[in-house]
Amino acid sequence: MQHHPTYPRSIHSRMVVTGAAGFIGSHLADALLAAGNTVIGVDRRSPQADVDAMGNLAGALRHPSFTFVAADLRTCPLEALFVHADVVFHLAAQPGVRASWGEQFADYSSCNVFATERVLTACENVRVPRLVFASSSSVYGTTDGTPITEDALPAPESPYAVSKLAAEHLCLSHAGKPDSRLSAVALRLFTVYGPRQRPDMLIGRALAASLGGPQLDLYGDGTQRRDFTYVGDVVHALIAAATTPITSTVLNVGAGASVSVLDVLAAIEASTGQPVPVTKQPAQAGDVQATLADRSKAADLLGWTPSTALAEGISRQHASFAVPAQPIGA
Ligand code: NAD
Ligand code: UGA
Image 1 (cartoon, rainbow, N blue to C red):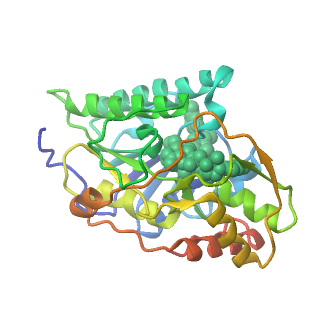
Image 2 (cartoon, protein in one colour; image 1 turned 135 degrees about the vertical axis):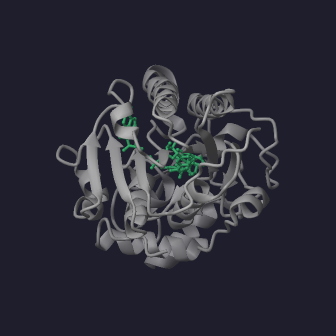
Image 3 (spheres, rainbow, N blue to C red; image 1 turned 180 degrees about the horizontal axis):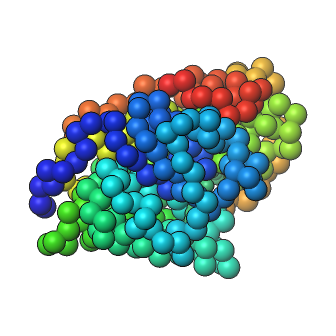
């Protein structure tokens, strides 16, 4: 692969974050602003019309170096947004494994694949040097539960996972073009949690159930395992991927511990001091039995290691229920 000498050496740069109104994107925007960057956040959810987006962006919108652009990446002109950007962080996507079957796939394919192609073409047109893409551990499919390395053959088991793998390949194809000035780093994120977590995900739902909200629908028998990764650690990896002089590649970003859903529920009960009431539901199509990242490549290339243990991360997410949209403090 070509060496791209034009990566941003300074963190005090012009950064674009797609999906900035979302869970991970809003934390990334906060961290980039705190480090002194100019940030343009793009999202189809406008804080004026969407209460969750407003909560996520409450801090960023008060910052003088933040500009929010409400736009749909499938249709909006992108070059004007990306011109002079040092880095485009492409996090916008239709996320979630279980909802990606059937009619909803239209949104998954258009937002995750077609929009990514548009983002990459625009990056090339205005000569953005680095794109950091939020890929997914789901591209691996079923594993044997041991740490998985990036060279394992992907075997996605849901339409969502297929769309993320396709987008990852688009990133590498664009960056690999002979005339391309773009380098692309795709981070395969493993089940991210923490304050502002999406409402369809386990830990937020289980915390809400334990604190008197609706019972948790427990899919399957709860023995399925995930490498739950704290959002503050993920933000550090995203920023390292933007600022480290590496060529285009794919990297695992996972905490490095595989924990069962039942053990997560026990940790939540320890945090709240109350049980998590559950309603048993069948196992869901597309959910894999186990995920676990081998972190050595991210450690070698980015110097990235996670620092937040699951109990600590759960306790921060629990604390955020009383004070919505609080900073991640990682
Ligand atoms: P999120 O839904 O909170 O954020 C995604 C944002 O993208 C949303 O605000 C949404 O409005 C925006 N978006 C979607 N389609 C768009 C479009 N066409 N134009 C403009 N904006 C659009 O999700 P998240 O959990 O923060 O995930 C962020 C990224 O990380 C996604 O790419 C997801 O696939 C990836 N990822 C997430 C996890 C996780 O555990 N949360 C794990 C692996 C990968
Ligand atoms: C998460 C994100 O939602 C995906 O967008 C992302 O791509 C993926 O991580 C990833 O690692 O790449 P998932 O692992 O399904 O997907 O995360 P959760 O929604 O938190 O679910 C974790 C486990 O809890 C799953 O086994 C799920 O079946 C279970 N669960 C979830 C429940 O039993 N009940 C629920 O209400 C939600």
